[in-house]
Length: 449
Image 1 (tube, rainbow, N blue to C red):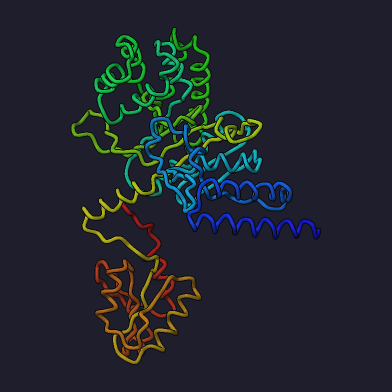
Image 2 (tube, rainbow, N blue to C red):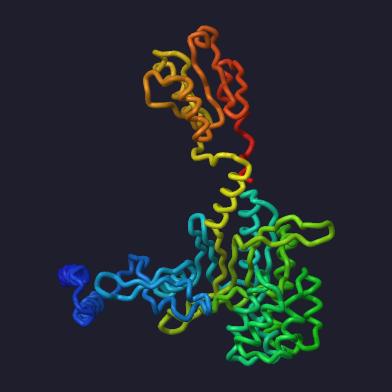
């Protein structure tokens, strides 16, 4: 035990030395030498089975080669010692690295407000269907408008490219071009594939015959009978899984929100199977036209090979996950509120306890205590004698929907004046009925659309 304690002290001191050298901006060679000593000491110390730690640093090589043409969205930086690190724009690659480093083979992860992943060996399409169910639940509860979730499978894409005659070396770059079909026309995509990426025009035409199709499970069944795709093993596996996925989505009651779209490519290189992307829809300009997509707000897919890239023995852990576009959703909500000239509510407070005259602080404190004890989200201004107008203005600015006003006459009558901030309507409520009335008036869910 004493030997271990001594080693731990040496590790701590050597770690401090490495950090000091980085702060002093010492040479890279000197830092590498001291880091090597630190690693040697840690190796002598051995693993601590009782602890699992997230590694916060993300070396550049961890991210390189995982994103295809989207690698331009990786931001490089150097720490004080000159070590090259990177900022990632998603958490999938670091999550896979964490699984490999800690030898985890089964986990369900939720990253607050953004990501959800399921890792482990399970029967086909059950976790994938759950991810799509969660995505639909989130977007429905946000009430930001109609949406459609596009699904495809990387194996179907690769199989399509193969039967159309795309060289293996061009699969990923052609995949990136196809992924632009939701933003530009097929002619522009074809021009890029032929003019910039050197694809033969007849091959591009064959690709166009496939990737411009979209539909439901009937399209899956149609392609299963396609004379070319049905002869490709990868495509056949992908189509079989998609057919099973649609069965589960029907049981979950969300099949009407899902579209099998062969143009969906998701330009990240780590996807290996099912991929999906949710887009908001805007009403058609004319009757009979299809609704138009106005931008992706969530996406994800299956990445079965990513963990194995970080495991020393190459052990694979199947994974599927999704990410919610929080920033884009916030932007959409803010734009709609601005268009409607509505203010963003900045608090969950249900009611402000206010006074109409001076010297009523004690009564306000008594009332707010009663409301807190009953589970009502209430607050008051931290002033002895606030002006009523200032209290009402505070409610309007913060988005507090109700004001409970205490006055001398209300105290005599045993009532509280309950004011709706939006309509300015006021009603006298018996004090013993106040909690129930506040609950009734605030029971309707807030709409942010």
